[in-house]
Image (cartoon, rainbow, N blue to C red):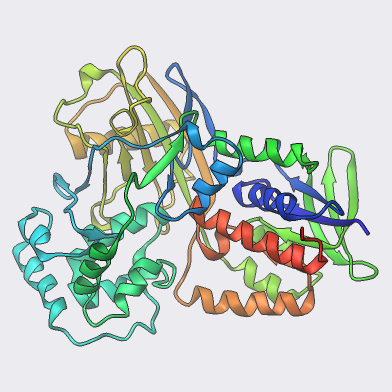
Length: 466
């Protein structure tokens, strides 16, 4: 019997799901992937800029210390075309640039010497942070990242170290973000002393080599390679096809309704993987379980604008030789982070020896999407002058708007997610959720979820290789 699995969503999660199903299934299975937009890739996009063929508009690398993204790159044949950032270091801006202290675990101090010798914290804040090693264990049942860090180290460690670092990854406000969503920090917070636990974690770390990697032709090369492999295995990818609902069909099957340029159509499926943002998924599953749909519809996503800028090297200070900087929440006006792309990536140097920057504006609680393009550029240039003391006259600007692109994991996110997953499994066996809205937004986390969803779908239809 031939089994048909439908994957909804053509971002990295959906593509990796389709790939994993086809690699591990027997010959009696077919896969169709539906993507509403005109192209696959989702929030990963690479395009030419400043005379270079490939400069990323979104994520520019993936984490190497967990295997999932690198393994996918290897499996689709591009592992030998990866590169890693230079040795340039990042800073935090508070009245001026301060190098991020060494010996940190996502901003959590793993040694007081680096904090004590650094310039970022005030003397009183350094003394307050040192109390972590003598304070009694704190409860973390509030599941709030900011509250957990402040309880151990005080306000400044959270505001100037943890919140900028984690906030830049998730576009988040750590005072309204789940501690459990950052498992490295959650593990530290479960111990009596976070500092001593962080020190032990760093001492036990055995990973060597680069922390991050990216294809030389940009992150878009990864999604393109996965798509090519899916199609080479016989997977059918339909772009410009928006799935509107999944309903129960006959004999345990599901009917997947979609709209494309020809009008309304539907296909039958034995299993469905919904690799779409939660708020879009809500409408798709409403006929299956209204309470699950209501839950998904309330999930919050932050919006970010990323401006890529080419500036003459003559306008750039030679002292600005780091990889970029982060702006703590109390210091933010519009810019939340700036990457000095030509310092960070050796292959991002235009032939005219100009400089490429990538500047992020917006986060949870700091909306910028209502501004037009010119206003965003003006706000960015004013902040860069304020932060760096440079008057920049860009040779080129590219504005990439990412509306509702960063899921916000509120406190107790995972407890409520588990209940929703259980309810969906009870109401619709064979329909699965995967993607950044659920169990991690980074590329490795999305690939990991894709593998899990693919395995669940294959187990449901009983079509794995033996």
